[in-house]
Length: 413
Image (cartoon, rainbow, N blue to C red):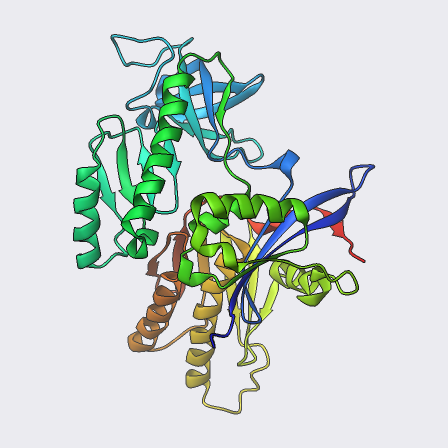
């Protein structure tokens, strides 16, 4: 009998805001692999990310020296639109000239949330994402295929996509499509085409600031993005979440319905059963201990995140060089895990302990690179400098865990 290992735990967590009079609730989703936490997402509906939302925006300003426009998507909410992201724009009023000018109303999708003084970033390339496909409006003749698929799967799925080619959108085939049946592919294709047609064909008749499509709740998105073989059990103790997850799985992933379970033991909460408070505390702690006795110090800054590798409890009585390499190997693997767990994105600099030989440096980089490849979010090892500083970039898909949690005090009975 198969032993359950990968579990997605979804629960609502009351918290006390230091800045608000009333208690509110966050939805917490935690992905566990046996007893190890792999991913955490925390969400308040009222503060939910705008990423993925599609609006009818209105061009308020063109700034030629930075080759960008500012587009208003809500009253007072200006977004940054690089003109390089404006190819194939869909206007509410047909134009002979596709050049964007002040006053234009067009369909835009949010790519990045606003951060402090930086405005949200939008694109006129609309993406409609499913479990197996992404439809895109930018290049209508585009056919992309995940580079994680093998040659045989790529050929089979490419033939399928060519038969389904549609002049109104491009299509990208995701890794999840590998094990999907033709019926599952057909069902999702029909669903995404209906969503695409509804947004594009009806959106052009809507007024400025209309919200045409809102992205799914983070835990629904997590269910959609995970491969079937990655998830053994979905557990929640909230009836509303259970019903929403059940409805989504029934419509889009019926093969996963039997993995969904409602936890109803009122004597011992899901929060306590999985030690979620400790997991949250550990996930935002600056210091992370390694089995070797070394430790990481993870410090986010305005421009990048620094990971400092330290010898910690090493006493100097053993072979120093071999010990440093061992600590660095552990640090490389743990850093990759922490980037995913904390959802750290952008530029990451890892300050490894100095190593004398190029062979040792390459071994450590190889470990780091192989662990980064396990991350479902694109993470790239750039290089290691002469000062043993490894440079990594990780794509931003949502706020970091620290930003999601904010300055709040959690409490559960």
